[in-house]
Image (cartoon, rainbow, N blue to C red):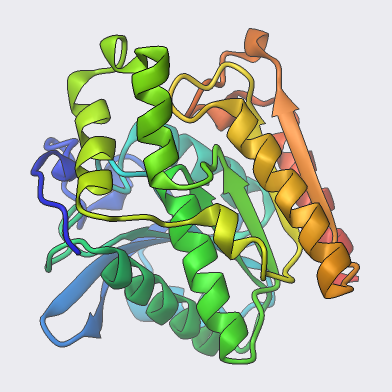
Length: 297
């Protein structure tokens, strides 16, 4: 199933082939994830590589991916591109904390070709994950999904687990249970009256086209370590959905008899994080470092 809308390509003023306009130490490249589909990716280096990066080629960046630093694949939400401000600000923090970050624009988003669909977004991410594993020479790879991207992350993780290679870590930022429940919540709370019209419309279009990205179902089977980040003042995906996913994951761990860690951080409203501004958490760098370092010991 596909959903069609044009607003996925803003901000229009950013040339996605020139990440240096908004983000330092970053190389742009494209991957052909299947016939007729080319996706745009930004590779941002960890702090340890910053000084060496000036004037370097995309090939040099690809080699640098194998330096042993963990890799985070950042999967964004359903509006805009890899150049949106709140995404760029998050990537800056992850980069300075010591991670390679691969920011993907799925098919139909940004300068990526093709039409978006649930299966298509999942295939794009699966391809990028396997590409990252290969070129990082088997380094630690984490999937980070925000909003819609949380469903892309868990869909991909389920596929990888079925193929016998569970993801080393999953971080879900402002995740929902399933798309339809977000739309239902908007109707019940009349939230759509206060959202930018376009934002609300996109969720509605996805539900109408049977796009599910069912995190609640996926987390019942996943065995990967999980960190959930969710703000109590989230104005788009209610905080109680993050709490529900946390509980589903804890129950699944018992049922599946695995001791992989599950953590959740709930942000108080006074931080102003809402749905997208997790970069406002002054402790974010420490939180992510602690979570991932404990897994790598």
